[in-house]
Length: 336
Ligand code: GLN
Image 1: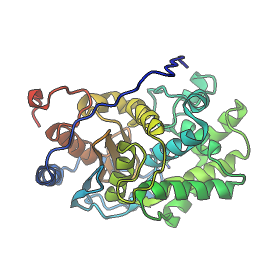
Image 2 (image 1 turned 30 degrees about the vertical axis):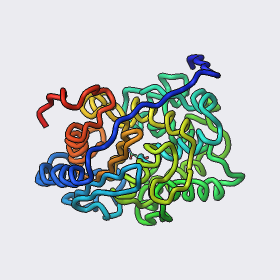
Image 3 (image 1 turned 180 degrees about the vertical axis):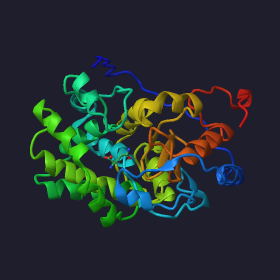
């Protein structure tokens, strides 16, 4: 890792404000209405239980750093968090071990390959590369504090619940369905173990990882979880500090490089915000210092990212002036 020690330097944060409450409400509704009839993409079926999802469901929510939420459509419908859990477990592990150590053990570079790639591990001498692909996520879950697997799981469930501001529970059907068909993740974990990248019982770690992916959330929960990352680690609804501002910064940097798997470059180009998707159709997107978006729509593109979620998020990023690379919202001439 690059050595960038800036101890003693006065660090500053610069962000703008969100538009008015009424404008956000209007735009959230418009993001929903523009995309609700879009039927592109396919529901994930490699986890058998996910194939039962209702593809018509579509929810959009924005939560701001004051804790207000703006919703449209099926924003309260629950689905399994899947890969989006990776972002929040990573944040909890960074909080425990710090920037440098987690950067070294798990990495922060994009693989350019699918989220469940085995070859990515082989090509990088067994290094998991980043915490947003399955190899890195399994390695990160292995680092979660807890003397036993049960304690690790409890710390994950409690930690993700603190981000959401309510007790999250696991979907037993989806968990069982994935646990019964999880040979690829088992293989990835064993490969990591063969390289000495994870300690302990690799099957037990995969079990915890599968459980964390099976926690149930809604688009509103995702928005609040994201708004906690936008708010320097304080949940804007419960006011509980979950992680430090530095850990938020580090987590968002990783989402920016790898949150949408091998499509992370296209996502950053179109949307200009750190985000994380999951195969059941959720996406969380964070506008640092302002708030976050949660979307849910089960039809996915070929990389496993929700189609309507990406489109609704692109619309909101542009129409609310959220792109972190835009220096003047008036000058943004995108055709939204
Ligand atoms: N539980 C899923 C898996 O490991 C999560 C993948 C995802 O959401 N991309 O395959």
